[in-house]
Image 1: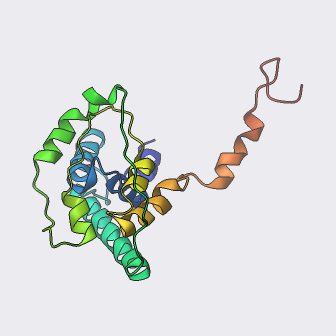
Image 2: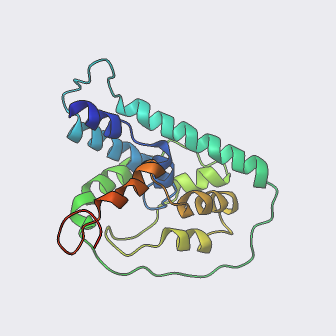
Image 3: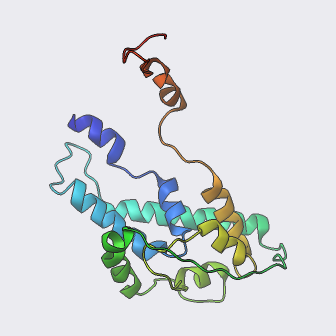
Length: 191
């Protein structure tokens, strides 16, 4: 049981971390806090046979991949003119997330950003504070559409990463559930 758990949950897929950083409410400091919390909560003893998990290494890998992906998008779209449309938004609504993630968010907002604002798009984004209440109804793709003019490269990146369906389960496994359909009698088989 332990080996199966470690196989699926010991390492966070990097695409999840990149998508997390592209949510303007959270970014890198909050990701670091969440990764630390995840490993401290689910793997507190660090008894992983010969595969120890280092939360800082996991964070650094996601951070490096995020920067590499940005550099690729910058190379491809760096000279493209920004779109001309811009609209405003409002987010309303509360949820149970306020109590669960509020303290982690406060901690990450108090952490100073490591990026220096040198005028480039990535630095501006990583140092930008987005005001919202934890648990508010927030549409990430809508935010990127509304801020496309300010962040033309990152908005293209966000649209491609956030709009794709993400699953770490093999497709064959997803569709193999067909034999597990219950019939009227409550038994597997045909009606």
